[in-house]
Length: 428
Image (cartoon, rainbow, N blue to C red; front, side):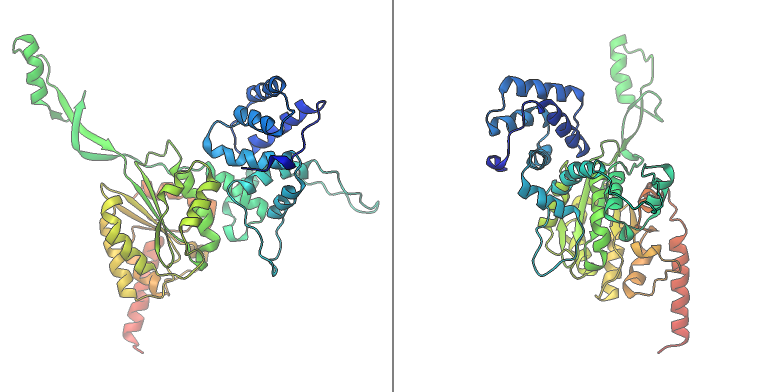
C-alpha cells in the first residue's frame, strides 16, 4: 500500500484535465481504459468529492482497475502522477542508465519500470527543446515506427539493443504467439463423416424405428493439443537473453489462441526450478519478479547435465506425456562430463514428441560445435535454431509446424563428424 499522506490533492479547476492525462498514462502502461471509463471516473470524483486523499485514491481505483494484476501498476502511476517528489526521483533513476558505484541501487519492483516509462515517457516527449546556436545545422528526425524500423528491430541482437529498443522489443514479444497444430488421438468420437462405423450407436438408434437401420453412425479419431515444456538457461553466459526469452514464454503462456494444452516453464543454472505458476500471472512484470524470487541461481554457473537429470527423474513423466514439445534454451557451455550430458539428452529426446534447441551462439557466422557440451547435445535434438533476436523467435512457429530444422543441424553434424574423423586419424 502506498503512503497517501505525502500526496497533494489536485486543484479543482484542473481536475478533469488531470484525470484525463492520468487515464492516458494508465492506458500506455497496459490497462484497458477507454473514453467511457474516463467519463465515469470524472463523474465519480465529482460525486464522491476529493477532500480526503484516501477516498480520492480508491474512487479512481474503482473506476480504472478491473483485474487484480493491474493494481500494482495503478498504485505506482498514482504515486508518480500526483506529485510525490521522492518517488518521482526514484523512478527517474530506473530509466536513466548509469554505472553501478559503491552504493547498491534499488532494483525496480513489479510494474515500477512500466509505470515510469508510461508516465515519464510522455514528459520527455512534451519537454521543451533546447536553444541551439544560430550556425548549428537543423536536423530533422522522424521517430515514427515504420516498417523499416520494425524490420531492423527484429534483426537486431538482444545484447546490442538500447533501453528504448529493448522496451519496444518487449512490446513486440507480447504480441507474438506460438501456434501449434492439433494432434490426432487414438480415442475416437462421433462424427458425421468418420472413417469407422459405430455399430453400437447404430443399433441403439434402430430401436427407435422397430429394428430398422436407416443410417449407419460413424466415428472418427479425436484431436487434442500437446503440452509445451520450456527449459531456459539462466546462467551467467545466458543472462543477456534469458530475461527477454522468459518474456516471450510469458506471452505464449497467456496467449489464448495458441492452442497449447498447458505450458510448463523451468529455469536451470546450477539447479532446476519450476516457474510454471509464476509465468501464469497476467502481468509480465509480476511474472518475472516472481520467477526471479523463485530461482536463486540467476547469472551463476552451469550444470546442464545435472539439471537435465533432475528433470528426467522428477518431472518428465508429469509434463512430457501425450506428445509434449520441448524448447531447450541454452548455449550448451557445460563443464560436466560430456557422456553424462549425452545420456540425459538422449532420454529427454526419447520422452518428448519433438525437441527444439534454441542457441544464441548460432548467430555467429561459421559457428561450429567445438565445445564438448554442444557436441554431446547436438545429435539428440530434432531442430537447432538461433534465439538472439525477434526474427529468430518468430521462426519457431515454422520449426514446430514442420519436421525440418532449417539445415543447421545437418550442417553442424557434418562438421562434427568431420572433426571426429580427423581426431581419430591424428590421435593426441
